[in-house]
Length: 377
Ligand SMILES: Cc1cc2nc3c(=O)[nH]c(=O)nc-3n(C[C@H](O)[C@H](O)[C@H](O)COP(=O)(O)OP(=O)(O)OC[C@H]3O[C@@H](n4cnc5c(N)ncnc54)[C@H](O)[C@@H]3O)c2cc1C
Image (cartoon, rainbow, N blue to C red; front, side, top):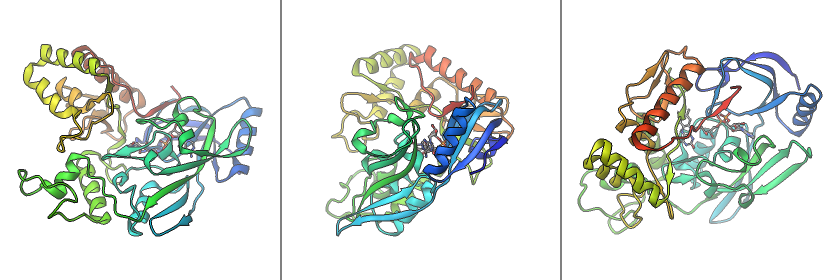
C-alpha cells in the first residue's frame, strides 16, 4: 500500500471541487487499513474515508490529513432460496452497477435506488433513500474495520441506527469504522414499491388521472424491475444532473427535507400564510402528504411527524435563480447546487448555500440542514 503526498481531491468528487490531501492512499482490505491508520497515528494525522465523493464538499484548501480511498471489489451470493437472496457486496463497487446487476437477475428491493452515484459502502452511511425506498430496508448487516480495535466486525442492521439520511456511521460512530462489505437481502418475489407519486403516476395514472386503479389491483399489471429502473432513471435525470454525464458537477441534494412535529408544521404554515398567503399554505398541505390513506399523497408520510419538501420552501422564498460566482441553484431541482462554471470554488458553493439557508429561515422560520459532508473547513 502506497501513501502519496499532495493529491488533488477535486477529481475524486462529483462536485469537481476541492484542494489537495496532504496524504492519500488506496485501501482494499484490513491490512491496508491497518497500515494506513498506523501511519496516521505515528504522524498525528486526521483521517477521512473516501468513497465515490458524491456526498461531500471539500474545501479549496484541501484536507490536512490522510485520505483513505476504499477500492475493494466483488459481489458474492451468500445464500439463496426460492424467495430471497443474500448478497455480499464490496464497498468499492459502484452502487448503480450493483442495482443494475440485481435488476438483471430479477432481485427486488433496490431498483428505486437506481442512478444514485457513489460507492456501495457509502449507501449505509446516510441510509441512502429515494423514491420511497431506503437502504435500511434491504441491509442485513455491515462488515466494518474498527479503527480503534483493528478488528473486523459484523454489525447487524439493528446496530446501525438507521433513520432518515442517518446512521451511526455519520453520527455517534463517525470516523470509527471503514465499511468493507454490505450484506443485502433481496426478494425474488415481485415487490414493486410505487409509493412515490411520480413513479406511481408513470404506471397507473399516466393516461387517465381519474379512475385511479390500485397498484396490483384488478386490471393492473405489475411493472417489471427493468421498467421500474428505467422510469426511476428517466424521472431522476429530469431533476438531477448525473455528474458523469453532465458537466455540471454537484453532490445531489444540498439540503435535507426538514422533518417537523405537528406543532412545528402548524408554525410553518402560519409563517407561510403571513408571508405568502393562504393559497401557498394550501399548496404545502397538498405536498406534506401526512395521510397515508390518501394514495396520491404518500411521498412525505412519517409516523408522528411531517417531512416537508425543502425544494418547495426554496422555490417559495424566490431563490430558484440564485447564483454565487460559478455556483448556482439547479433550475429543475432547487435542492441541488451545481458547479455551473466548472470552476466554482467551495467558498462560492458554501456562500450560496448560506444565502439560501438564511433566506428560507427568515421567510418561513425553518432552518435547513446541509446534506453533503463538509471536509477540510
Ligand atoms: C446526482 C446525485 C444524486 C444523488 N441522489 C441521491 C438520492 O437520491 N438519495 C441519497 O440518499 N443520496 C443521493 N446522492 C448523494 C450520494 O450519491 C450518496 O449519499 C452516496 O451514497 C454517496 O456515496 P459516495 O461513495 O460517493 O460517498 P462519499 O461522498 O465518498 O462519502 C460520503 C460519506 O460516506 C463516508 N464513506 C464513504 N465510503 C465509506 C466506507 N467504505 N466506509 C466508511 N465510510 C465511508 C465518507 O467518509 C463520507 O462521510 C446523490 C448525489 C448526486 C451527485
